Image (cartoon, rainbow, N blue to C red):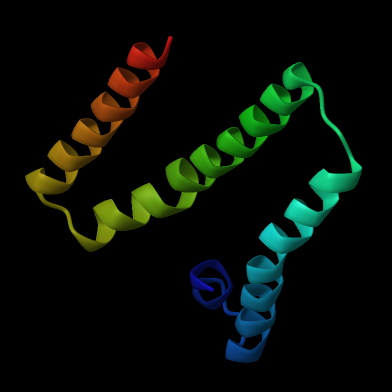
Length: 93
């Protein structure tokens, strides 16, 4: 909803996107019953979705937070979040 409203969309359009977004996990769970994925394919799909969400965070949400809250704490928390993700990935290897 935030992306639609921020870019000039109407509230009804945002609610339609929210309903679609809320229904996709159910549709995905049903689809997984009929479409088997090999582990390597699943890894590629998850990597693509992770990249998509990182792109949204880096291109839209992160600059907006720095513009709205230009404080040292915003920078510190961003770096702490990145370090936490790095540590979790390193521990998961």
